Length: 146
Image 1 (cartoon, one colour):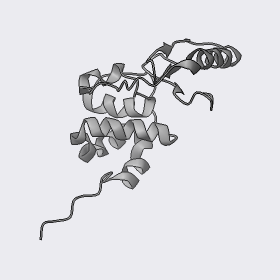
Image 2 (spheres, helix red, strand yellow):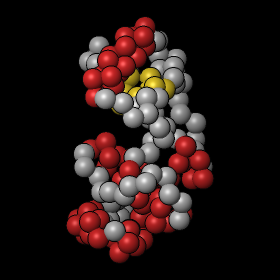
Image 3 (cartoon, helix red, strand yellow):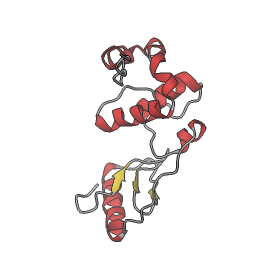
Image 4 (cartoon, helix red, strand yellow):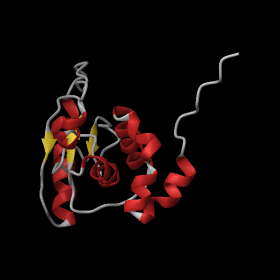
């Protein structure tokens, strides 16, 4: 958002355009012209410039609660759709930047059993093929016992 308010970040829960990581308030704009969105983001950032760190942490999440959390995105929702058969967004897609990848990674941390089954995502959505081929395994397996 604004380098003076790095705790105000783009996106959030489904439908939010931004949110303040300090107080938890979200900004919902719906579909707007870019100029209106930029002005709203700037105003939201200014409003939250005085928010103080509260030590507030996101609560531990259950997998069933993930679609309504602030850690969703189209690419991670694509994974969720394959394994839970629940549509979070109308679109499906692959990760396009580190934030997208991070949401996918954190979803797989929440549901580690899905990691070994990522091939199913590529089977359902072929654009995922190169990502699955290059990222499996995401975690380094432990060294075998001596």
